[in-house]
Image (cartoon, rainbow, N blue to C red; front, side, top):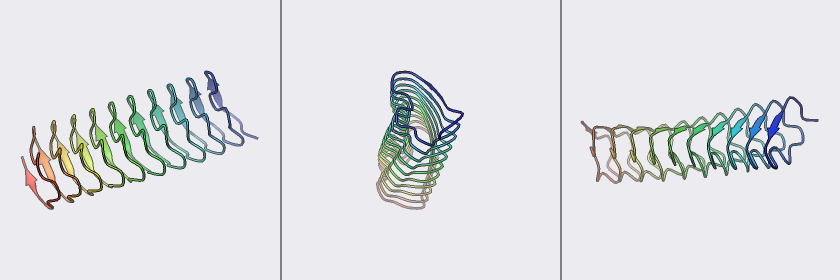
Length: 178
């Protein structure tokens, strides 16, 4: 019953039943999709675990690989949003950006390993390589610059701008450093 889908590559959209308006390009891209719709998956194993998630864009090898029902995510770069399962409205650009995100919401990670360890943090913005890379559950942090707030794990409402600013902050809150 699915319609208006495009599948190019071995096992692309393999299990699709009623999902519509999906584009899957690459080996096993959107392999497990059943009812998800309006998804774009380009690359080996891109969105391969997706079952019901919709309005996702995945470009690169193993991008959004574990996503099952997460919606409105954008991931570009090898392993970006790799472990996301139910997280929504996240943007990850760069190799392994938001790699460990599981159910985090409305995070923006731009740069290699930005927000790498975040599993359930929300409303974070990290721009720069390894920025907020150790963040696990911290919320509403804003960082710009290589390795800014790198070791922040659970701290909330922190703002860091510049190379290595707030580097060793682990759980401190409401800090500003430039």
